[in-house]
Image (tube, rainbow, N blue to C red; front, side, top):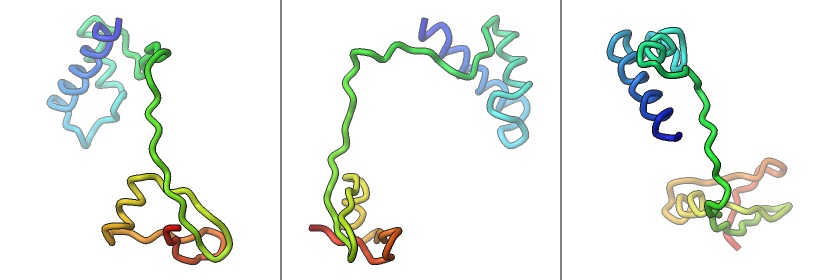
Length: 100
């Protein structure tokens, strides 16, 4: 069921973008729905897949502190801090978050 709905959905995006231009149409607007009808597909913008049984990916979190509390940052944000690409501030006290 997934491929029978996903492939026409994505092909319709491609065709609508090429015919009308990406900047001038809404992603699931009239043009896209028209292409879906021409492809003989139901113009649905949402997929319904059974995801039960698939493992859930949990991101590792890193503990940081400020002047008033502790905070958990995702691995992505932690890496940005470690590489000097970002600084995060506490919403309460405004202090820069530092690793513990």
